[in-house]
Length: 217
Ligand SMILES: CC(C)(COP(=O)(O)OP(=O)(O)OC[C@H]1O[C@@H](n2cnc3c(N)ncnc32)[C@H](O)[C@@H]1OP(=O)(O)O)[C@@H](O)C(=O)NCCC(=O)NCCS
Image (cartoon, rainbow, N blue to C red; front, side, top):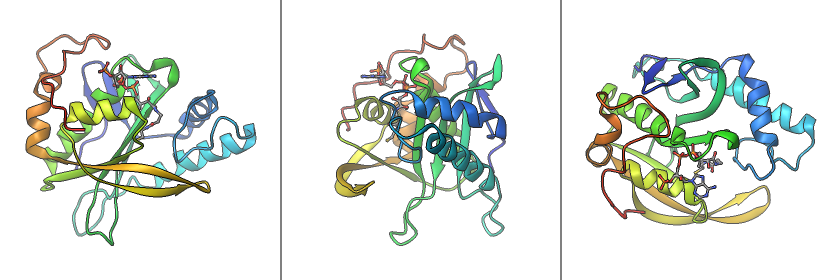
């Protein structure tokens, strides 16, 4: 069981509250922003606000421990700066993957477009995965990514993910390609040692250089 909130290097991973709904709606309404669980920025204001409310309420509904495993099926967490914890910067999650395939845990994230490129999604993922691998017996987590999603592919590479395959998916009536990737916890520990070092500086935007050119993705 992970102890939420989690703080590291100036950012905090905390539970979602209703106060986050306007922030999520603002992020979703930013032109060009695209995240599967939120209505696209081209939708109506009411549709975007509705999807933001559903998104936050779903995250809140999943703040439960599963009795047999004593861990949560999902961690859908808000990302903020420690200094302004009420102001949502982004989202990071370990979702259930596919029961039918016998695989679990799929990482997900988004960052407010106004705050992108500063290392938030990378660091939030490192923090969540470190806590998750440390607190459970899971050896692998997974991911899917659109081949053109360069920022996300860069993050997955830095986390130590390795590509495992590809599939196509219907997204709002359109067939889209996806790459599948997996991350063994040992690859994660090896790839992210510099990010997990708690002795280096606290400044976002000054994250250490990537630990190695892994070229896994
Ligand atoms: C993917 C996403 C979460 C990245 O968030 P972020 O906080 O900007 O991520 P980071 O700052 O940790 O940066 C990730 C990498 O992408 C790069 N990057 C960020 N924005 C970029 C852009 N617009 N174009 C190209 N590269 C970009 C960063 O420079 C960084 O690479 P680097 O370490 O080589 O410099 C964000 O782009 C987003 O919210 N996208 C929409 C939702 C989404 O696609 N989620 C993932 C689904 S698989």
